[in-house]
Length: 578
Image (cartoon, rainbow, N blue to C red; front, side, top):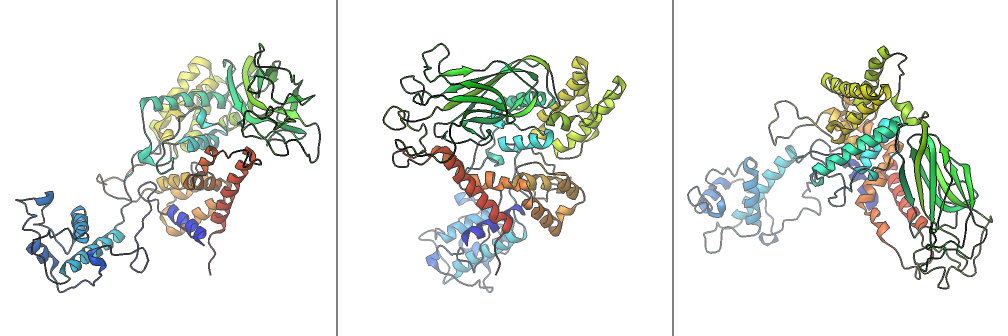
């Protein structure tokens, strides 16, 4: 199957990470259908070993292409046809001109018989053999973490789930891939976004009882059906919005709900009576309100409802605002039998959707007000592996935390200079606000460091500019994990790299197989396959609701997920062998 062959090619690609980024060597063999001699009348000929090709060049080419005339800005006086790989650029030009029958030019003397064909075949054979013996891995400029890699790195490091799109700009793509180093632009404004992201994320990870109130809005698209329960919402509800929100501190928060309205400003779903909407946190109801079906956008509060302040403890919480389901079991709407969404703003007033239900458009969470402190959260548990009981114990505890987080963030061992620099940031924060602020400041420095933001690699000593070399096991571990997992290497992979096992083919193969069986390898489907097959562009496709009345956003999401799961299944099972 072509699909299985494609997966095999993908797996082969993962093992070719010893040079440039996203480089795949492809050297067709003469026995393959891809190998075709393109010109010289489509002829092929065996290389005649009796012909002195250097003499042929000297007799028929050097007359024009010499050091004095430099026709075509090239000289062949010193060209050695027996070793064309020594001047690869010039040899490729010669092959191109000879294959196109552009040289010798019309009217110039030409050798008899298949001499030119023999020459070009000899050049191609030597160049191909040199390429096989010395593959060019390509160059690599700096590479920074893209949005997905940044978010996954934060999750692995701090056990804090974030939406990197809230902090970083859209990634620049090349051939629809967002991890190509040459396409990643760098500017002072972009660096500033990484600094601001480091400050905000470190605050969320450690918590801040002095944080000022802020607002975060979660939105439903017009193609989302709200007839059934949405993923994450409590059972017995329908529609609405459910999301994981990180509360920065213990305190009061206000939840504001905006409802869909008709084009005339009326409440969408106004024919539906006795609608109730509940707010739940981690599946527990904290508020329940009757929905006013007569509200209008012209009202002082618009088509919106706002909760009373609700006390919530710090940390990531599953927040849901959903309508209570009024009836269980299958339904049959004889007026509008389809899963109508808001793809057409006229539904509800144009004859379709007369029995349409109320739709929640936005959920905004604002706070904290009157913050009382910071409760224990998963990220705080990950960060604070020790707690000082006295001021004298604080520096040692901070050094332990930094020594643990630093290598994981930088994807290498910390040097003494690294440790001293991060401890100086801790001391600055400690002087301003005590131990926790000191640790938070050190984490901010870690996240703002080039060693975290950029995937830096160091060439071995003695390597000249432009010279190919095998990357170190530590750098190879980073390349491998970011391709297969979209995340930094785990402890086992780093240990294998430290032992030098990745330089051995069997050790590298064993690690690749282990990583492909890990749940994190789902990133191959959600990241690589999605971009390769352009699945992300499905969000740009909105079928006409009259021709495809059963299409809605949850169906589109399921179609996308099915393709990702199919790809990941092929990768895990591998191609069948006869």
